[in-house]
Image (cartoon, rainbow, N blue to C red; front, side, top):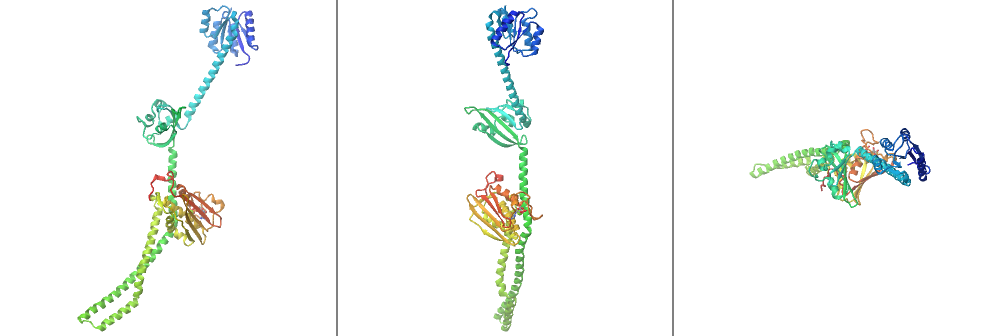
Length: 550
Ligand SMILES: Nc1ncnc2c1ncn2[C@@H]1O[C@H](COP(=O)(O)OP(=O)(O)O)[C@@H](O)[C@H]1O
Ligand SMILES: [Mg+2]
């Protein structure tokens, strides 16, 4: 409301007009009173605007109050209208109120005018305030429903008995249903097409606990992965008044996760194969060594067998002659000759040496075959992807087994110093731990230019097993220290390095909930420290949820 009130006064009597002006100015000294006595002037004044209240005589020579009221209510509806008349009877008064007058005041009772105007203005003020509030409520409701519909997540609001009260557009899109098809129905009817809640329904869990509930489910009906959140809304006494149900379509994210896992596992496998490829020549050499001495031993044993055969044949002849001696068929001289020949042959064939050497050759060959068997077994353990399950393992044994595989790569470059502590059985993926060890050992050997040392230390440290592999190689430049675990980072020549070894190592250690640190100074070698929890990776990290194989 403005400070200065503007009254429009429809009146033909100047005396009455003056009297009323005085009355008005008593209450509102600054007020403006516009005096009018004809219809056109009346309409013009209203069209000019700014009129706060209309005072009108009932009868005028060329216009009348009821017509004025009718114009006001049709065209300027909200302006308060008070009849001011000298002769208004009760019937007219009632008729005027019915026609929309705000009030009426008799001219001989002008003391009522001030309070009547004040009440009328207060009503207008109240009405305007209410209208504003209504507009605000309407705008807020509009804003809420626009935002509700703009949400990318599907949101539905339910009563405590699971009836759907409201759904946003995203729910309609996700389920391919209209709001009308869902509102008023129970959530299980709409979401699962069942007559009662499904087993494990998160809504049921949330209703029981009164707490928020989250779940990720694969919805076969929709062929989608959904992240569902249920948020109960409680009143002051803790009773559920409403339930907010949110659905997010995470199908793409799940697919990306799956693709990433597949890529990671492919990367793991291909890196492993690449390293095995690199090692193949050395491994072949390791196998070749025993193979060649076993075959040479077999050849010698074949020669020995022939010599032994010759001697046995001589002995047989001697034996036959000795048998004939009893029958008187042989002469002693012949027997003496045979014995001398036998002796000579034994000495020629060096039968004493043969008899001494045979057990050695057999023993050595058995050892060689054992070595081959071990290498083949280690290789098999190493590369078989299907057997990758959580197991109890003695990490010291894993190190020895890995050393067997990479031996050819290390033996010409480095002296291996083993400083093994007593380790508890550790729950891990042993093949992957082997791969970590192989990557670190091969890197260590490759970092040594001519001759150096690789020290392998193991110990139990708190809840962890600690494996420290240090070398006396060229070390790592400070600027590379933060990059060596990045995939494809390599400082090695093409064909020598893939740059995947340490990245794969890092991921395997992380999968075990462990840690890997590196310390290095250029020219002074590098030390990698790995910590693996004895109790194994947490269930989140252990893919496949396989049990532990002792
Ligand atoms: N023991 C080490 N001594 C020096 N540098 C190392 C050592 N281990 C790793 N590095 C550095 O980290 C890089 C990345 O190693 P890795 O991921 O195993 O890939 P690659 O061996 O195929 O290069 C290597 O190229 C090398 O520069
Ligand atoms: Mg490497």
